[in-house]
Image (cartoon, rainbow, N blue to C red; front, side, top):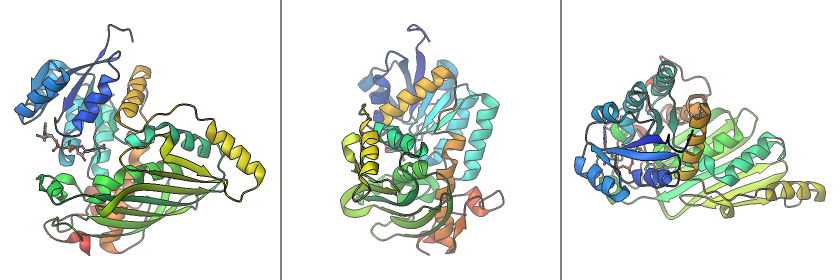
Length: 371
Ligand SMILES: NC(=O)c1ccc[n+]([C@@H]2O[C@H](COP(=O)([O-])OP(=O)(O)OC[C@H]3O[C@@H](n4cnc5c(N)ncnc54)[C@H](O)[C@@H]3O)[C@@H](O)[C@H]2O)c1
């Protein structure tokens, strides 16, 4: 693509996270023009447009798509609006970068994938943690056998959210947020964990609402077994006064840890070989240290990857098949918690209530998540 053929990008939803998208796009001004912003609250879109020098402002998505014909649209609206907006944008001929959680069920994911087939466009889920240089390097090392077998993992998203945080009307509800800490906060590290270790095979989980006056869970925990036989524990909470995002992965040839909060660059990752043979220690350390770039896992790095996929016309990794393992896991986590059963991969299919809705159609006005 020549310098004069920059891609047109639009943002829908001009709230908090849209700033991450705008700043991410501003790092790629050689390739894109941030040409429009749209928000049902026009004044928010207008103020956002002034902040980032965006020329066109809309309150109506249909008008924006018809007039702007963007190549790429970032969807930064509350979760329950995502599926419909993704499909609407693809039908208008735009690729989509949609905030997490992409959608509220496997049924919705299948609808999005059907729309991809019909339109030839792709909807990319924001999973920015995958795009840090250390995460990419680790994944390559594991996939190429440099770390040996995976044995166990610990995946802790232990954050804090005040009552004020939940005063935003869409938060803390099944209908609008599509879940609690699992879908809203834990989803990032869960996705990173599953992406590295691969397909999961079974899960046993529990959820609870302990610290906030909300209908969704603010704590969840799960035991997971992977198809490669590794096992793991997952803890998600927004009731932790000292916050941390911690991933520990034990492989045959190293313990790999990531310790940070909302983002990670190389310095947040460490590799230890402990008491292993000198030869293994030397090989693993040398391979890990062959990482030369230092890229933070964030919106700019995911956007860079997406723009290069657009240039190549190839399916981005965080679309349909590349994210199903995570979305099926999230559905299974709620199903296991609410039914008190072990849930196996592949078992949530059309006809299962947890295929149609992440909460399985449970009493969303009540305390379904505390059962
Ligand atoms: N990836 C991350 O690290 C990260 C961080 C924060 C939030 N998020 C996600 O981003 C999304 C938005 O979160 P936020 O905190 O920015 O929310 P927000 O409430 O600050 O902003 C959402 C905006 O969308 C607008 N909106 C709502 N429905 C719309 C529609 N149908 N069409 C156009 N505009 C509409 C609202 O008026 C509002 O301005 C959520 O899915 C959230 O989970 C992701």
